[in-house]
Length: 532
Ligand SMILES: *[C@@H]1O[C@H](CO)[C@@H](O)[C@H](O)[C@H]1NC(C)=O
Ligand SMILES: *[C@@H]1O[C@H](CO)[C@@H](O)[C@H](O)[C@H]1NC(C)=O
Ligand SMILES: *[C@@H]1O[C@H](CO)[C@@H](O)[C@H](O)[C@H]1NC(C)=O
Ligand SMILES: [Zn+2]
Image (cartoon, rainbow, N blue to C red):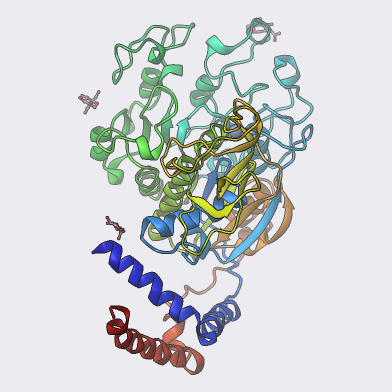
């Protein structure tokens, strides 16, 4: 019956869409919202930065359609949480040395406000990839540090290991993003006193909330993992014998500091009484959301919620970085479905943040570090599964999927022909979409990424900008870092909870409602005809 209801819904909504009045009144509501919008010039007490790793614009659109289709909607018209942000800009993502960048160089741009070289984190472009000596004196700090220095609470939430490029750039300086533990440091780096990223998690900024994966970089070599005691690859990596989790616990002695590695203990953490939280749910990266055991690991919406609730205790406000880090990894593997599901999970986390914060005092920014060579193509009918096939067949008389990649593992030519997918279910989470050029791992893509902003000074992020501008605009809004011109801004009056526009504006939208009612009547009148 659900399927029938779904079909009826789609049939009915397409009838509504045949009316010009539907589009006109929808546009009127959008127009009125834009006319009513005045820039929020408050000082941002809190900042939440959501980063979709590899969430390019095609991923953004396709994830919207998938999210709608998961709710049995047609999908194209669905409005995601991210879609509700009032201000939109674009970021140019190139690094100092590459046209198409990686997550390390881009994180240095949007977190530290300085563009740099590929593979390097928290250092300027004067430092060279992998050369420890070149790092000295070229360190640059991030907005997480600026916020902490201004007395705010700070946190990082990710679905990758917490030592991975994106979160690492908020607290570490490293000529190589790969120096996760001391065992990853080359001899030259060790003799030149460069330190690994995991140890910098403790030694640099005092971070209030740390959530993600990455246990194995924190414990001495051979230490058994509590969750996978038999798995050799999950065991501790450190050659220096340090147990960074225990060290963290003793560093926080006298405070309420919780270390947890599973969902039971995580759920038991009371944010009202917690000063510090370190939650490491996996030895390395966390599971993809579709493959996650909800009894062992929380979703990114749940980790975001816990982080916001703990950080909100600080009367000076907070800075929180939330990374949906595995959109990128799924794309590298050419797995479109998995990548989109990761983006949908991130959108749910954005929804949680919208629910838990107040637009008058919290600046929320959603962006991506870089794109991937994903295309949405063909002429699929309205409501066709975004993971499905175009009804149009190619000149080789074979179908193709709506989602495809420019390069990646999905190029599997057989005798000069591409695989025949007529009988293949392309909607499974393991399906690898066709790629034009064979590569074991798909590369990144180079087009601009979207910047969405809501809250105090969000309007600063409109337009086309260098990615490094994002850190400066957020810092200005929150009055942290070196530019303190905005600190004296007078708070604007709290917005009254505004009435939805369709009740406020009469005229056109009222007409639209009458029209919709008539359509419903017409529809039910036509039901008997349908069955004749
Ligand atoms: C969507 O429809 C399917 C069957 O067609 C049903 O199992 C599922 O519960 C529905 N989902 C929602 C969110 O309505
Ligand atoms: C590394 O640190 C040691 C001990 O602090 C010091 O003696 C040595 O000079 C340092 N080496 C370099 C290259 O900075
Ligand atoms: C969660 O971690 C705690 C602390 O190590 C442990 O006692 C508990 O058994 C774990 N729970 C599960 C379900 O593994
Ligand atoms: Zn990547």
